[in-house]
Length: 399
Image (cartoon, rainbow, N blue to C red; front, side, top):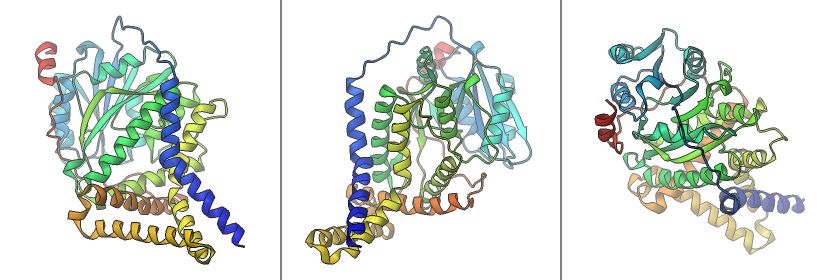
C-alpha cells in the first residue's frame, strides 16, 4: 500500500513542478529557437466590427465609447456595436446617445448571457473581422491596428493583445501581478511555437468566418472561441504591442468568485471535449500543459498533502514536506485574515496561490455538477484612470 502513496506523491509533485516551472522553461527555449514569421505590410485596412457586450455598464460605457471612437483606425473601416444583455440601468441610453457618431445598439430586453449576445452581435456585424472586447477595457490608440496587422499572416485566425490589469487597485495586487507576468510570458512563447492557449476576452480580433456560434450555456466564450479557431487549422497569436488597460477585480471575494466561475467553465470545456485535435500536436501539448494540468492542480495539491500525511513514518523527507505545506497554507490563511500581510510581496503571492486553488476546487465541483449559471453578477466596474498612450495625438490626427 505504501508503494501506491509513494507513486501518488511523486507523480503529483512532478506534474505540479512541470506545470508551474517546467512548461514555462521548455516553452521559452522552443520560442527562442523558433524563427519569427514576417508579416506583410497592409495596403488597405480591412473592415472591423468592434463588439462591446454590455450588462449594466453605465459606469464605464461612455468612457469606453469615447475610447473606441478615438482609436487610430479609419472611420470608414470601423463599425462599433453595443449589445445590451437586458441592462436595467442607463447602459442603453448611453449607447443611444452615440448613435449620431455611428455607434449601433442591439438592445435585447431579456438577459440571456454573453454567449447568446456574442452570437447575435456577430450575425449583425458587417466587418470581415470582429474585435470583441469588454466595456471596461480601454485600448491604446494603435492597439486595434497592431492586432489587425498580425492577421496578414494567413495561418493566424485570431489575435489577442496585452490587457494590463491595474492590480494595485485591488487588495491582493502583489499576487495577481505576479501571476499575470507569468501568464504573459507563457502566451508570448506559445504564440511563437504554436498557438496562444486562450485569447484575452477583454480584447481580441478574430476573422469573422472563423467565429462559430456558441452554445447558449457556454461559460468560457473566449476559450471556446480559441479552440474553435485551432480546430479550423488556424493559430491564435499574442501581440504584446497591442496594449489596453483594465482595472483589476477590487476585492479578494470577487476574485474568488471569478476564479471559481472560470474553473467551472473549464470543466464544461472538458466535458464537451473542446480541445485541439490530434492533427495539431503542438497545440494539444500546449493545451495539456498550460490548461488541463493547471485546471486539476487543486487535486494534485490534495494528493501531495494526503500522501505526505500517510507517509509520515516513511522518512524525514515526507515529514519536512508535510510541515512545509502546513506552514505555506497557514501563510495563505494569514493573508486571508490580514490585508496588510496580503499586500506584501511574499504574502500576496502565497495568498493568491492558496485563494485561487481553493476557488478552483469549488469551480471543479460546480462545473462537474452543472451548478454554474451562464449569467452571473459581474464585478464592480470603475473606469481605468490609466490614460492610453497616444490617444490624444490620435484624436487630433484621426478626428
